[in-house]
Length: 171
Ligand SMILES: Nc1ncnc2c1ncn2[C@@H]1O[C@H](COP(=O)(O)OP(=O)(O)OP(=O)(O)O)[C@@H](O)[C@H]1O
Ligand SMILES: [Mg+2]
Image (tube, rainbow, N blue to C red; front, side):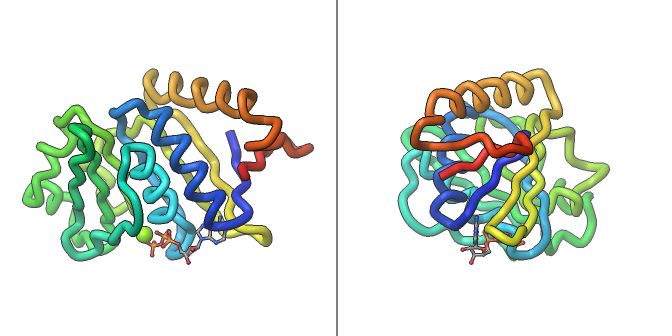
């Protein structure tokens, strides 16, 4: 499944829908180069759970926990992770064991230590905004993608459009 996001507003709106689709749990990988829009998408996911406003990048702390109306969301940015084993020392095991939503930017830095995600999103900078490719990594992720697809048809009149190449344009 591929989604085209023309601007920052669409990026946040899509993230918010994705947040609802997760229904409070799941491991989400956000891949893509510097500036691809991973944190912006995370802002949308957090918004689905009631977090308004800015999202700071946990570049140095590596993990930022949120407690939103009894819902926990963990946002990790592993860009500066020197070694996957470091995840052990920052409480990675507790994060993964928690029944929560966990979003990981730069998961490639934790390869070998991190488990497979439910959803893997790959973000690319394109001429008109960003292109997001989504893939399921588990049965749960598969269900999440199906739910997301059903939301696309439900909002297709104003919220999204199917482009000719099968890419969904999110507005
Ligand atoms: N769909 C979009 N179209 C145009 N600009 C966008 C879109 N989504 C995000 N941006 C812009 O891209 C810039 C970088 O976004 P963001 O910080 O989310 O990237 P990132 O992938 O988290 O980068 P890093 O790897 O450094 O953490 C921001 O200025 C943001 O407003
Ligand atoms: Mg970021």
